[in-house]
Length: 110
Image 1 (tube, rainbow, N blue to C red):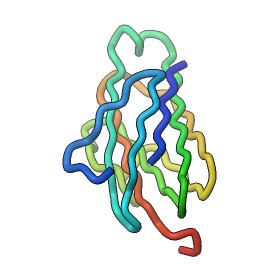
Image 2 (image 1 turned 45 degrees about the horizontal axis):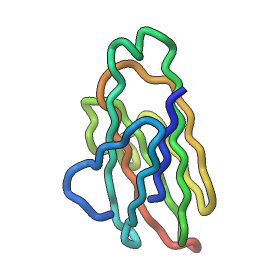
Image 3 (image 1 turned 30 degrees about the vertical axis):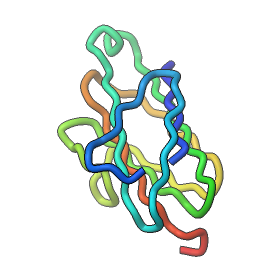
């Protein structure tokens, strides 16, 4: 099982995530930020379980996840998704290749 933890930064390129390491960032209200990680062919030969944990500090985080070639997961264009004002865990299986995560920040009352 691979686990990635994101504590939801404004950046142009998708930030890389590493298995088992926590990545911190901040998304401006109604902003969008991206992360990415790679699943190797050797890992994908076994059943690959991925867990993305999100810990929003303020507001609501909408999380959209997509396998390549979609590098910009967002509403209406994603493979997996989650929405939370508190801790959220999104679990899925994936094949080898790049996986991209898009986080959209909103206000708690949105």
